[in-house]
Length: 110
Length: 118
Image (tube, rainbow over all chains, first blue to last red):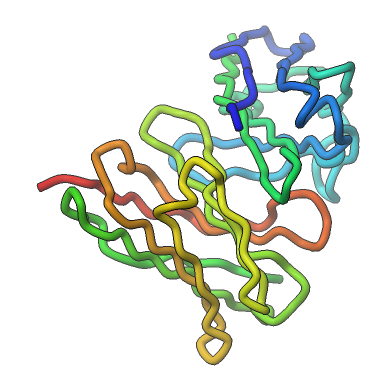
């Protein structure tokens, strides 16, 4: 079970859109629509932002959206705001009752 | 609304056993949720350690399975993690979380830092 691959960092200016990729394999991301995304500000616990690839929990801004193609899932944040600066982690069901996270991506709002 | 709170020693000696407890409030540990442990080494990503159901059924990360034991205490509405033969590589913030009978982790505890050092 290998960790999912995320870019170490991405950046964007306020108002712009950014996309964070999350690449797994045919054993995890590619086989299940069970990818979730978590936002983590420094020193705090992760917060659920998306689940089942595209679904948003109540209270999460519509600026956050998700997609998946093959073994890669993506998180897109549109209309970037200063408060979006945080670490983002993807997670996928890995089969055999296991779960696997990505290495995390640091988003910087310029 | 379910609230989770981790507790346990912040310092564990190498080759020792790390023991943490997660207290559940605002809900019952006998619900249909899976109770999960996730860790985050300093400056790194999250790692799923494993999960346990109210019945005692558990699933563990294959890479940690030989050293991990989880348990549920229904009388105290809490669940626990034990990780044996720890090394410096086990130094991390340990989070407990809830996984509904669906496919995400929410809510999370605030996390507790465990350092492995002599």
